[in-house]
Length: 174
Ligand code: S6P
Ligand code: ZN
View 1: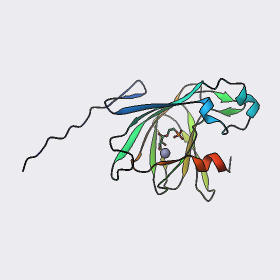
View 2: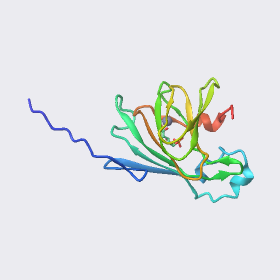
View 3: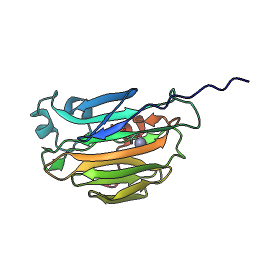
View 4: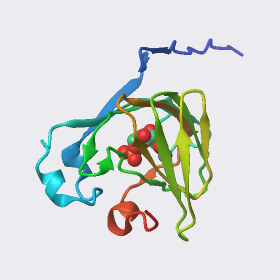
């Protein structure tokens, strides 16, 4: 029987970016965060094309493939909408029983966690600290500093993302 050598891509973390073959970069502008900030007047005065965050994801398996891991880096830029700090859209995982690990590389912020039942927690993120997102908890990062909040994340690759629940119900306990 012939044994094939597997190819493991080389990946590197460099200057708060994840580099390597197969890394996918995505971004969200303020315009894509409509509805998450309280102060609509302040929101409407900001440019819709202003970059709020960028995500570098290594997705070694096709979406939905069991057994794999997805990981990467999120750079959440500093800024405010009225009195609120820039934050990520926030999501549950489609497979609700999915945990996720965040490790803060630089910056200062919080991770807001909330379960479908409304149990919630706010976890501080400072460089060198890890936050474990328990299964069933929606998660949203908030940058309270004046530099990018840079975090490493890893979770099961078949988890999927549910943004709709946050979009329609929001976080109830802020
Ligand atoms: C994915 C993981 C992160 C976020 C990223 C942006 O499960 O939690 O990669 O996708 O921080 O946040 P959001 O809420 O726009 O996906
Ligand atoms: Zn997630």
